[in-house]
Image 1: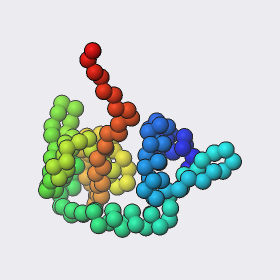
Image 2: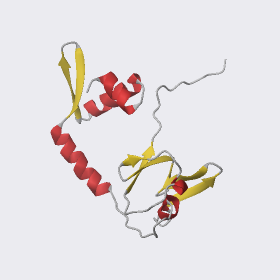
Image 3: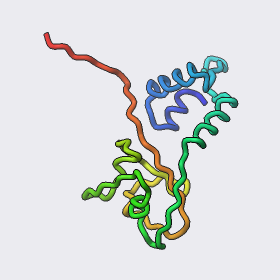
Image 4: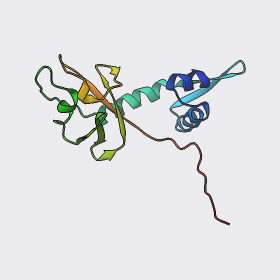
Length: 145
């Protein structure tokens, strides 16, 4: 994929996207090809296999049981290591396995935009939690004179 197209797809700036691509290229996970005057980035097939294997090892699945009509927040409270806090806007996931941060989640493969207490469970459901990590674009030191 071309750099600007990838940045648009990920909804991040081109410089932030380029910084991540350089790290991935140096780690030998992706490769850059020149097509005309354009750089195209592509994941290396052997890297993809290794990443899938690693993610499978790190992925710990929890199976919990709830009554039909329960909300997602109540279901997630049954999973050890998940901390959910209440606010006026609704519940939010504040930490997973003692890692605090901002978490988004996919329910049955669909990214949800509402708080987990607003999502009703009416069938068998799969939830994937994803922690958003801050990316530093520039570090600026300010010195007093």
